[in-house]
Amino acid sequence: MRFVSLFLNNRLTIAPEILVNDSSLKAVPFGELSLVELPPLNPTFQYDEKLQQTLSGKSLLFDELPFTLDQIQKHYENGYVKYSPGICKTSNGYLCSRCGNEKSRLFAMFSCFRCKNDNCAYCRNCIMMGRVSQCTPLISWSGPKVKWPHENNLIWDGELSSGQQVASHKFADNIGSEGELLIWAVCGAGKTEVLFKGIEKALNLGLRVCIATPRTDVVLELAPRLKAVFPNTMVASYYGGSEERETPAQLVISTTHQLYRFKQAFNIMIVDEVDAFPYSYDKSLQHAVSHAVTPKHFLLYLSATPSKTMKKAAINVRLPCVRIPKRFHGFPLPVPKMVWGGEWKKRLERGKLPDPFVKWLKAQAESDRRAMIFVSSVAVLEKLTELIRNEVDVPVDSVHAEDPLRKEKVIQFRNEDIQLLVTTTILERGVTVPFLDVVVFGADHDVFTESALVQIAGRAGRSKIDHNGKVLLFHYGKSLSMMQAINHIKNMNKEAGL
Image (cartoon, rainbow, N blue to C red; front, side, top):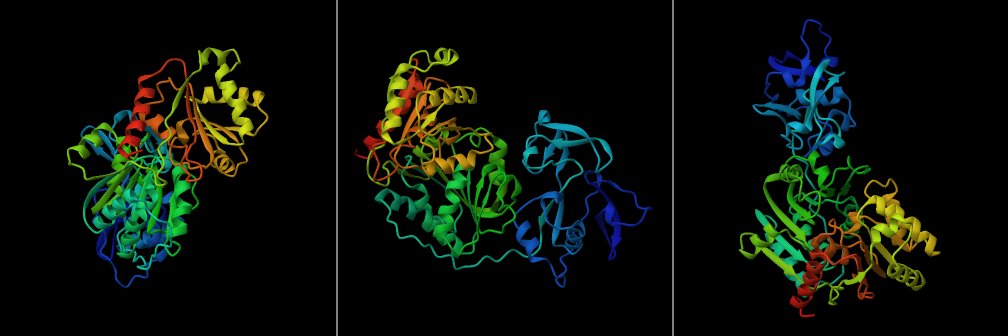
């Protein structure tokens, strides 16, 4: 977008070219403007509360705001809105102000209609959130802070296990202070319930809270649960395609990618499944978390399978940690059983299934129990789903990260409309379904790391009335990851005294 510099109220200011009817003023791309001081706050200006709530703690593009250019500019001229460069030039190339990307290979040039420049640089790293380019200003709120309500009572009559109680008290005791804490809890320990008291305390202190997780499926699982226990609180879920992204909220459940849009918004940041892909591998997502918190904040990490670095920091007491080795219902974690499946890749290529897998499949279909069948790739998923449908006469479907019906299929699986669901590792976390058995088809594939297999096994036996779910690893040779995952689960059961 092109802007012009002009004098307004005896001060040098800037304005979008389209709003200024003066051909004598030279219009230049936003990124080429000289730094202009933000106009002072005009206390007599009647600011738009909806704009305040929409922009509070965020850094957004013009295209993301449901307000006219003229409305936004008036707020800027009165000191309530700030314009910042989306892309900054550096000595080594460029820096994306939104995602923190500095890698030259993740920037590109294009012929920009808005700024009339044939070589306008943009960031490819966060392009899925809308294009940030050299001529793109990011808009943030600089007026009075939103005052959140202080009556956010928790409506929940459940009981915590002894392990949950320790973790819950530790988290709640830290609310209002700075620092960090790791809650290292087995799959099915009831981490969400552990958060309730701490979140309630934070909300009633007028603090803003975010639960960030790498997976959309986890957001979809958590949001209704938190809305139910905090019925008087402004709660919103943020993920790709969410209809609540413009909803002002004191409690936000968000994918880590959506945090690119926030800036110094949250006093309490809860990072769920901190070890999970892509968060654990993507430094720009870690930047997004650090960018989204206020200067004084508290960070809570949740994980069943923390990284080696995090484990070491916890063991050496550099990172405060609470461990919950037992599930909330008190029963042991299901220990996976390894099953020889033969040369499963070659059999799939010939349009056949391994005999041990077929035997299990037919027995499972007759059991009326649901099952999740994890596979290593979309190609395997498509072939296996087709072959399974030829073997059994029960509802079978498949789901993967790019499936446009992913959300609907998970709901159908929960509602028992699907009995056998073939899935990639996208559902290894955050999905809780009772009366469930779990199978890994081709568990020797290197995509199934120790942590992935522990998480997958953690889908079974999560219900008090069904704690004996089976976990089977069909393989063509035992992998180190398979044995490490089994030992991990056995050790957690041993630590829990089970």
